[in-house]
Length: 480
Ligand SMILES: *Cc1c(COP(=O)(O)O)cnc(C)c1O
Image (cartoon, rainbow, N blue to C red; front, side, top):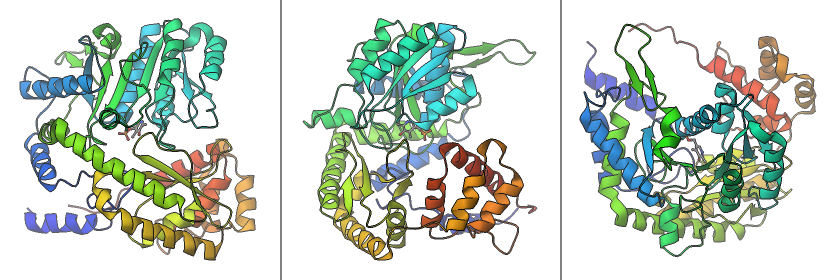
């Protein structure tokens, strides 16, 4: 056996190339409370339950207890009546997938469809892909919020085929809450489900409201809302791998529950998509939620909104930069004027030790810079704003990134429906992404790559990125 210290040292060395998960300088993918002791205990809990299996709640009753605790706490947080039931899933995507699956299977109609604001999370498109539920997209209003009148028309066009209306609280890309009251009423009038995707806002908006901030209604207090997803691994600051899906009643959850006795082994009985289900993330989330507690989350929410307000105020003072929409929650979307481009600003921020996330042009709306602000970012906001001002300044000196016209012309010839390996190779050469070896040579600066993707249609972006993933995920050919 290899020396354990050596293995752990190797892992730490590998981890050195990852984005930092602590320190508040990574403004997407990770959520940092800044509470080192809570993190330490939560990670210990993950380890302690890493081998436990939620497959059978009678064999591991501890997991059932933790799950029911978390579901109850989450239900109360989002104004759930006593009838609410739910489950802990592996993440927001699984919660969304199950909400769509449940709506489809309860309705039992031919060619089921769901109506989504164009800003709904990509997880709904994944659900459409997996479950054969057509995603009918409705463009948002100018304020990036769902358009109830257009949603009503889409529902009327679909008639019986409509099984679900979706709202976000808030949307990931722009950080605004949809008009849930109106959307849920449209669903209720038609006797169909309304899912509120509060994956990213669910744990923070209730506290924001309690602190007196203006939060549009989005919880179970809104009539017609039938299910809500809330990620624990976002603003509950739990270790990765935990989300909650709530249904207003047990009857609404019923199609989600699955049993199979159609084989000679144990009767499989599952409430979520996983069967063998590690107790680790559940225990980690339970410890995070219990140790931070209601007053702790209120404090963290106060901190995170102080950071959001300071970022909004500071960023809008930077010439060349503006706010896409006043944030309803903890997500900020920024865009640039013609003096520079968001992709270069993201690269410049990275070179200053800050990760901010580029979002491509979509639906006629310009490319943006996304910030998921964490409580731990709070103390560093002044530094963040200095880095942002410098980054915009440097990006302005460089001018907007331009894609080589030859490369742009090559991209224009590509057909996403028939993109071949040879096309992808051609693209890599054109974009200068081929290294000496067989692998991909990833540049440290991504602006050119993002600008190239930005030129492509969404369909071509998908095809190119799937080819990219296919190349990345190849075995290393090492023995143990
Ligand atoms: C993060 C997120 C999801 C998906 O959650 P994962 O945990 O990444 O699977 C869904 N909806 C919204 C609004 C999100 O922010």
